[in-house]
Image (tube, rainbow over all chains, first blue to last red; front, side, top):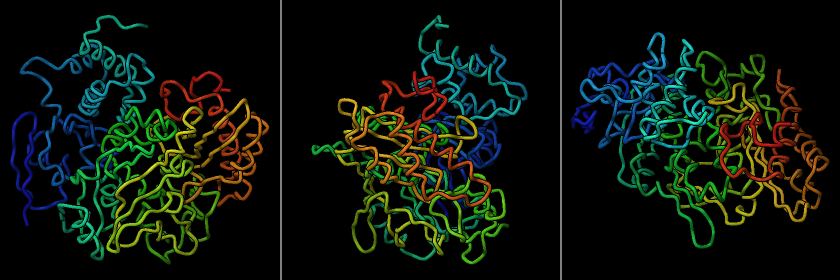
Length: 164
Length: 350
């Protein structure tokens, strides 16, 4: 049996035929659409490396069946930049040296984009740390990650100077 | 992951018909079920995907003061519903102390009620587990059991229920609305989960094909909104299951407690309502003496099931802390670290 899944991936409508309902959104992105920016870390919802936006909300793509997402809009790390112009969160991660090996970085950035649009953290580093706790970094670049999230949030919300 | 038949019913009635077949399981967001399937811990023959049933996604604030939460409301959406968080702050705090932001964005409230234990032996198909395979024995009894149950456990099973959400739901008399092949019924949340006894494979009172369609909070529970907290001790301060947790709600009139609610998490196979402790608190001044008596009463029947005797005094201390925090008053804003006993809320960090 085949299942048809219609998705909008990074703004592009896609109609996909699945011959197996076991395919996760993560495997669909990586193996079928060759969007390998989304990383497979634990594949069990514990590390956050596979974080993408589904209808604007950050989720773990490893714990989502693609077949159940018919009609959804997916944004991956490949969909953030506008041509050569990086997204403010991507720029901030570079500026604040918020990575070492880089494996968790696409998930960290997608999670940060989600966190900023949720709008609950404000300029409190503790709330940013709590809001980003679903993304593990084995290189422990956490200090730079928090700085990058706060900086990008300032730019995205039009705030130029952040209170200490 | 095993192969399965995937069906997408158009209504709750169709879903119930499809899920009444042997080996069928409901799929909401799948944050727990897919994890278990990837580990071959559960192997459903059929998944009945209900995730698109919008009739189950509403939060209704009713005229009589009740709040009815559709089973497919996402954890994050309920916690961030301003009206809900104002009326039931301890429930919002419990939700926000669970899992990660990504998981809370996906996971549903109905699924939360039915999530499985995180006992490592249950998760490991190579281990003996009476819950996974009745009669296989319990490897946790002689294994790494420092996080296991201290109340209501049996020789057959010492696993705990991992839910944070269920703890204040039990404290505040939540009702679970169920539909199934035999019609509609509702039960107290407190009566949903079963203690293990000799049948730990049976975790809830749900019959085959039955589905949780909503969770309802009674208007009376709002009386505790000014003095309600959920506190949770974890091995790390975010994105971890409870070692022990406590939901506390008080109504205080001129310094005296008129009504009290108390429930514990992480201690048993179900959220543990401490009714005797509640009765002791009523009529007493809101202070350490009453809180300590309540804590002692709540853990009176506790006994270690392994290397976990520490959870008993830990639970007592947490109860005292949670009651003190509730007495002090619900914070005007959700703490930066929800449910943390190490929060910077004045007076809570003692």
